[in-house]
Structures are given as structure tokens and as C-alpha cells.
Length: 264
Image (cartoon, rainbow, N blue to C red; front, side):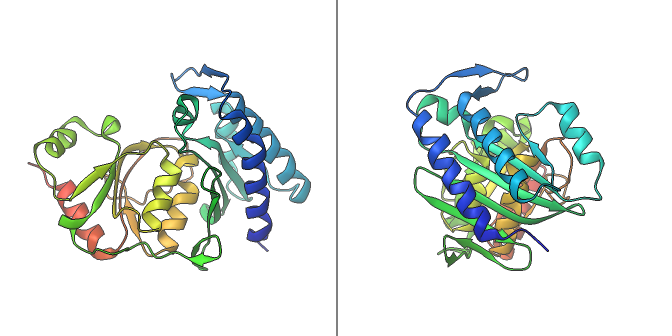
């Protein structure tokens, strides 16, 4: 039996409100070996959820972004048991810079698939969630990704230019098939905003497991679609980076993927 999603939502919302928001205006930060930021808030959030999850579900280990690569790899090597996958603060650069766009992302992996996911935006007090086969929600309201447009030319695209292959980035600067472009700096929340119809397209050159695990499920359950630049499913239980092409409906996804995959 899966953990109760409602219990998880309350747990993550309370932890985000109590651990992240008080630290938002008083950030203590340092750099990790890969050059990215880690803050006191990342570590406090991961430690709190590790402890609280262990109390309720002691048989499910936790893989967190702020663990070592060796620890993460060892946890993923045993695919026979459920595993929590946590990004304690997605959008750390935003958080450290005082930009109010960041989230906590928690997924449960079961037999190599995402069984449930919760993503919390404590600034806006929004909780996105999904259970495999049970739909996606924002709070208590069902999510439907398509939004108001089904036309590529009228769509808003969420694009991280920095991590895209050079040729694709150059094509996008020469001309775009969509109406407008944004990049907010939190992978987890961009998956959720796509699922909520706050954008129709998504493109990213390299996300980690904790960036997309919960988000892929939320978008799928909201009726969206995604794949990598190689045409593979985005979700795969490993720590390698995965590229993302996604859209809020099957028709938009086919059109967007067709444009992105064009070699010219």
C-alpha cells in the first residue's frame, strides 16, 4: 500500500513553511563541487524530511540531492524496494538571490517507476501532487495541462537556454514557433506550471532525477507529455542528466517535438 498522499502533502507543506521561508531573507550559502549553490535551507529541509519520513515509513530509504554521488548510486542500485527521491530546495540560486520562485519536490519510486509525487511552492502556498493512475491536483483541484491554447504559435514556452545543445540554442535565437518564452529557474515548479496550464511548452538540456521525478508524474497525470532530446522517456532511475521536451497536450507535444527535432 502506498503512503497516504494527504499525509505527505501536509508534511511537506509544513516543513517548507517552517524551514525555508524563515531563511529566505537571511541566506547562508556555499558552493558545491559542481559549482552550484547549497544553502543552510537545503540541508535543514533535507534533514527534517529525512527524519519525519523515517518515523512514518521506516522501511523506505531517502535519496536526497544533498547526499554524495556514492550514496545516491548505492540507493539506486537496489531497485527492488521503494525509495524516496527528494529535492529539498529546487531553485537554490533563486532562493540565494532573493527571487521568490523555489520549491520542495518529493517523489516515491516503486519498481523503477514514480508512484506518487508532491511539489510545494511555499511562497504562493501551492501544493501540486499526483498519484500514478489517480490524476494530478493543485491543492484539492484537478489539474489539466492543456490550458487555453492548443496552437504552437500561441504557446508560452518555458526554456532553459543555458543547458541546450549549441545548434538548438542557435535555432531558437534565429526564430521561434511559439508566442513567448520564459525561464523561472526551478525545474520542479516549471513542470507544475506546465501541468497547470501556466505555460504550454517546456525545453531543458539537462535535469537530474530529483528535478523531474515528481514533475514528470504530475504532468503525465494532468494530460501532458514529455520525452528527452533522444526520444526516450524523461524518467529513468539514475543520476545522469536528462534532457526534456514537454507540452501540455498530445497535439502540442507532437508539434513541439517535431520542431525541436528538425535538423536545420
